[in-house]
Image (cartoon, rainbow, N blue to C red):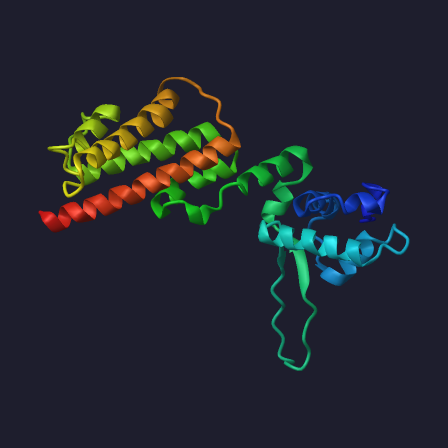
Length: 248
């Protein structure tokens, strides 16, 4: 089965106008024609460009950038070599299309892949990542946002020791009350204590409550920003809970 980029883009000059992720999407379409196929990188490059006459160094470099993008995005990986007793022979380094790469076939799959890359999982608070990243990567953006801020609420309640009947904005107002809040940074100025309360109460009122009561459309970009914000709030809860434990 042919894997020539010229079948998708006859003019090689147009390839140079593409970003690595865009050219990578072209390559993934061709690779997914037979995703179980293992290939050497150099041979793949020659096959991809075989439809062009004298493609030139710039095209090869653009292809290299696109293949690196496919590896970094988890769509392509190096196949582990088969063990052999003959240590004098080094097997060729073969690549393959990963499970993620197979799922990214077609326009919708590629769109979901690009959107999932908006949010590197390492930016998320570890406990939040376990709960929300899978729904974000599946393009369930409203669900991921709701789960994130629900978890913020749960963690504030746990760290403050307030009862389960205290919920939402009321929970934040009580947990971070400027004079009596169990999580309030009492060493800070009054205005700063008020700011922390407003930060948490506003976050729950803005990001969690609307999704609790009705369906609210969330863009991939907004979801990425909100999950990162929720992670910051959880980090603050960890810090303030630790300070509370030391002072008590």
